[in-house]
Image (cartoon, rainbow, N blue to C red):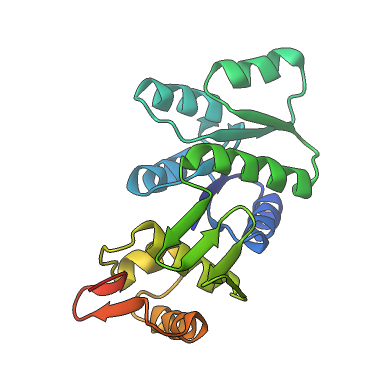
Length: 220
């Protein structure tokens, strides 16, 4: 599942942006300052980061510039009230991939984030295994040519398993990549979604349970 970090100290704006991106099927984590974001960014994979420029603990440009020098390649979209040409140029010169001036349309931000995420993945837009085909760009899944109707969560779990076909994927790993950070790792949400997926994918079974290891899409 595509994962995005939103770093914004204005709580109302942070909540609105996160809600819109989640509605588009993205996994979203949020932070109010650079230090909190840094802990998360160093501990997990992200496809895009939305950074407000001026945060309580500094200018995000300084953080991004320093991380770029370390080889960090995650696409960054800067948000800012600074609308001068010099400010926009500085954003691009110091590691930004896109720049959006406040006030802005949340729909436009969502479209820009989607574009950056597509750039970052380097993953094929179509995933296949046996007679199963997933078009990630169109968000369509077919089994033996038949179009299937999946929920956003079912699509995210199947996409993750397909990208790792013939490899065991643990429940905790699926929680980490397909649910928001508040999900309870001890709950049975993964089992419920996988059960629904198996029913929709029909026979012969593609998703197998490996005792003590999780799930495998492919031949056990």
